[in-house]
Length: 257
Length: 160
Image (cartoon, rainbow over the protein chains, first blue to last red):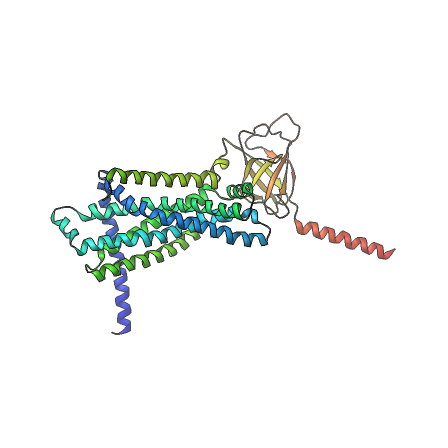
């Protein structure tokens, strides 16, 4: 094929994909109004995307915090500022690592599962079957999953940060001998609730929307074959990771001056 | 399939754990507990040089934190720095002739405002200003003064 034509087709296809995804999101959001009466559907999905993701989040949070403690201590000790270890660990976790690493893990663990589930529902014609029974699959299947993702993601990210701080304390105070009082007081005087903690929570809510949106959209768009579902799952992880990293850069540039 | 009651219990636990983590970030990691100034009042002070003082730096009296710096601006009429401090309403009996100086915690630490209470019977209130101020010690200035005095001393030794 003519390379120029290929480029044109690629651009048109991507823009059409974006447009379809936006219309899809609009449809899901308007469909999620009816969830107020069927909140049990959301609770079920919070279990699937939140509670089942908890283990990997807790373990990674603990280890990321412990590594930050180890690495940060040796660098800070060179400048005689080992007492600021708590501040370093807390700020890195609350501002960046908590939301971003949680979103990446969330895309890998919950996003891929959502895409595979919805894709398989489509492949086995369950979605078409629902429509036959006058049940709107967008309201019944997609909307609860999107809402659950938006609820679960900030909760997971705050847990990641909190566990990470404890992990950093475990290594910094327990193993490397940083003074416990200095660790916590430097942290408290340097971390602002409104500027650091709340901005981290806002970040994680945005990531929750984006990752779950990509996951349900890819599942709903997937070619209804086993290969198509596998490709859609693959795309979910790649696209949502890229989107999280790009959005994180933009939000960091806007939030922290 | 997991039982519905058990599922709801797990989700409840999950949400509670998330909120607990947020509370920990707010009160243990962040400054929400110490940063809330209860019905505070603001006081101004003019310094000829504030060094590296930043907004949100602590204001202390006898080493106890009584407030924080809320704004720093330049007075265009006399080129002095105007530091606005938000003091905690619990400490409403600080005399008007209190002096403010910019100090450094440790050799290279953060700079903060230290208050030294005077003896007047009237107290600082919202909008009042502190008259007696002492600027920050800038390390380069001290070193250059020291070097100059050393140079002049050694010069006078040679002359003798």
